[in-house]
Length: 338
Image 1 (cartoon, rainbow, N blue to C red):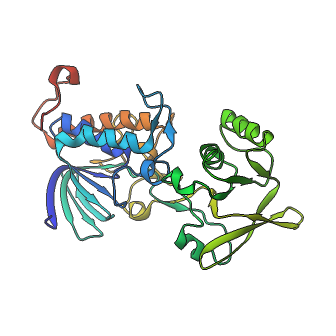
Image 2 (image 1 turned 120 degrees about the vertical axis):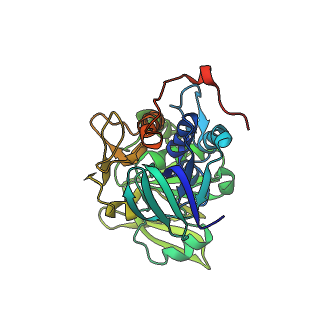
Image 3 (image 1 turned 180 degrees about the vertical axis):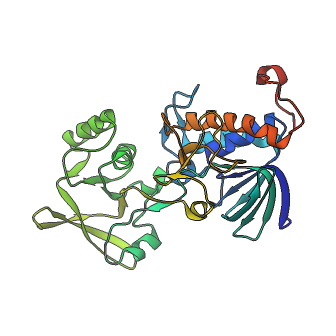
């Protein structure tokens, strides 16, 4: 595409919240450019848990992350948003009605309003401080995300961590991995009680080996192939676990990146917004989803969807200053046909 484009709304972040904002803007006849540092749509849904079920999406008792993104992609298709993927917005200037954004690929976007739907910013895993880690990361012997459970079929898997990700993946890989060992520093897990109870039941049945209280100490293998994971208890005593794959789940390191330099009011690395409009401290720039904060905020995808609708309605007067917005339900006006 050309290195310059114009649009009504520039949406930074192509996760589920940013994608649904395209739909809401489109329903109000506002064009969108969708920008994301990842090379595909979906944000954390596809990067972190494409095969994990999500249970709190209305009308879907359970839907996997990748399936949700596929549905959203179908939903926004009639509005033909320009997609600038695999690039980051590095500069933002201007004012409401006339913003100029520049991406890391050198693309310039002229937009009347901006929606920041960048989750909690750029994210990456908290890596354990182990010698030789990079060599195992390069071969996939150490990985922080699981895109396909089948990739681990028949493998000896060691999972380290005490939160939801560690527990959820221990449950998800039961019956797929040849052996699962879970390492944690304490008996109590910081996970959903029902999930923790299921893990305890598998451990009691001998289906999962619990290595408690231990923490990662060293990796042993050759040529990027992992053979053993060494763990140490609180007294420094060590033992080795046979392993083909190590899954360390110690959370994500969140970075706002260039967003932190745009003069927007921050509150603990999040953007403070007006709850009724989702507008940030800079007129014309809005924030929705996990990056936005206000009293009573819940970090749920469904709340991000509602915020996308509210932001779109608040933006309409910026895009169409001389046109009154008459609220209509989608059941009345329908959706454009491609």
